Amino acid sequence: MADAALATPAATTAPRPMLAVRDLNAWYGESHVLHGMNLDVGEGEVVTLLGRNGAGKTTTLKSIIGIIGKRTGSITFEGGETIGMSSRAIAKLGIGYVPEERGIFSSLSVEENLMLPPQVRPGGMSVEQIFELFPNIKERLTSQGTKLSGGEQQMLSIARILRTGAKFLLLDEPTEGLAPVIIEQIGRTIARLKREGYTIILVEQNFRFAQTVADRHYLVEQGRVVDMILNAELDQNIDKLHAHLGV
Amino acid sequence: MFELLGIPPQALFGQLLLGLINGSFYAILSLGLAVIFGLLNIINFTHGAQYMMGAFIAWMLLNWAGVGYWPALLLAPIIAGISGVIIERTLLKRLYHLDHLYGLLLTFGLALIIQGLFRNQFGSSGLPYQIPAELRGGQNLGFMFLPNYRAWVVVASLVVCLATWFVIEKTRLGAYLRAATENPTLTQAFGINVPLLITLTYGFGVGLAAFAGVLAAPIYSVNPNMGADLIIVVFAVVVIGGMGSILGAIVTGFGLGLIEGLTKVFYPEASATVIFIIMAIVLLVKPAGLFGRAA
Image (cartoon, rainbow over all chains, first blue to last red):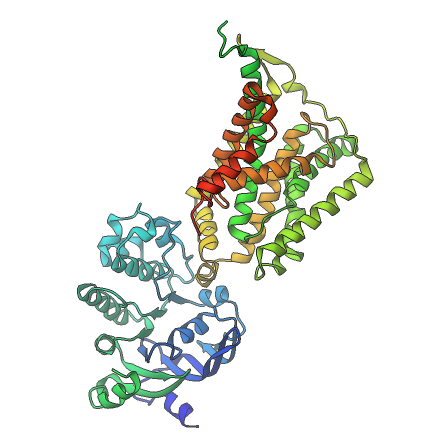
C-alpha cells in the first residue's frame, strides 16, 4: 500500500517514533472524514499537516486527543494504544492540545484560563517562565479571557498547555488570522520549544510559516496522507505542494 | 409610630420579613436549579420533591433515630445528595445528548413518583417538626417582633448562597465547573474529569434543595406536597433571573420574596400572581432573564 510506505519516515528523519497513527478512520456523526490516515512523529520533531480546508487535518488532531466520537484504526503513543481511551486519559499521557479558535474560556479570567489544565507530567514550565515567554499575559491576568486580542488569546492557549508538563503538543492553526509580527513571535516560540525537546504536530494552511519551523510535512487530502516532504526538500517539491494545496 | 400610606409599620415589616423568608427559600432553590442547569443542561423538575425529601429526612432522623435538627441540617443534604448522585449516574447521564425536553420529562416523572411514595407512606396531612430549643422565642426590635428561627433561616440561606457563589466564582474547583459548563469537550481534553464534576454538581444541587427543606421543616408542616407548591414559583424566579446565572438566582430569589411581601401589604389580591406578572414582563423585555446571557 503506497500510503503506508509514504507514512514510514526515512531512517534519517525520525528518531524512535513517539506517535504512530495507522489506518485511522474517523466520523462526525454519519459523515466519514478520515479514510486511513498514516503518520509517524519522532521524539523532538516538529511535523506539519498541510492541506486544503476540509482535508481532515483538524480531525486528525481531534482523533489523537480523543474528542472525535467514532474513530477506528490505531494511534499509539510512546508504544501504548490510545484508540479506545477517553480524551481525559489521553491528556494525562502528556499530550497537550491547542485547538483551532484557541478555546479560551469567556467565563474564566486570563489567570484562571492559564491555571485551568491540571499538571499531567512533572517538568512543565513555571508561571514565571511563561510570563517571560509571553509578557503580555502577565499584564492582563485579571481580564476576562476572551477580552484579550486574538494574538494574546493564541499565546494564552499555548501557555496554559506548557504549564502542564505535556511534551507532545498538537497545535491547530496557531497563526490563523493573526498579524505578521504575532506570527513571528509564535514562530520563535515553536522554535524554542523544539530546542527544549518538545514534539509538535502543527496544522497549518500557511506553508511559508510551516517551512520556518518544521522538520517534515505531511500533505493531507480527502482524509489521508498523500505525500511526505522533508523540510530541506520543500523547495524542490514546491510544484507538488501547489498542486495539493491549490495555492 | 410612623405610618406609610396608611399601613401600620408592624404590618409592613411583618410582611417584609415573611417576604425575606420566602425569598430565602426561592434563593437556595433557584440557585440549585441554576447550578444544575448550567452544567447538566437539565431543567431539574425533581427539585421540589428533593426539597420535600430534605424535610422528611430531617423528620425521620428525629423520630426514627433520635437525631436532632443541627446534625440533620448536615445529614439530610448529604443523604439527599447521595440519592441525587444515584439518579444522575443511573438515569440523567443517558439524556445529555438529547433535547432539554427529555430531561424535563424524566425529572418531572421522578418528582411525581417520589411525591407519591411519600404520600403513601406518610399521608398528605403533614407532620409537625419542632423549632430547635436554641432558636425558640424572638427579639422585640421596637418596631416589630422578630422570631429567632426566622432570622436564622434568612442568615443561614444567605451564608449558604454566598458560600456557593464564592466556590463557583473564586476557587479552582469553580473554575473547573465554569470551564466544563462552557466547553465540556475541551475541558475533558485537558485531563479534567468532567463526568465526575457533573455527578457531584447534581448531588450538590440536590443537597442544596434538601438543606432548604430542613430549614423549612419547623416553619411549614412537613408535607409530601410542600415542594410541588413551591417549585412552580421557584421556576418563575429562575426564568426572571436567567437560567444558569449564579448571582442572578440569589439576587432574584431574595428580591422577588421581598416584592411578594410588599404586594401582600399594598395590594394583597395580586400577591399570589405578582411573580408571574414580573416573569411575563421580563420575558417580553429581556427573554434571557435579568442576569442571563443571550444564547
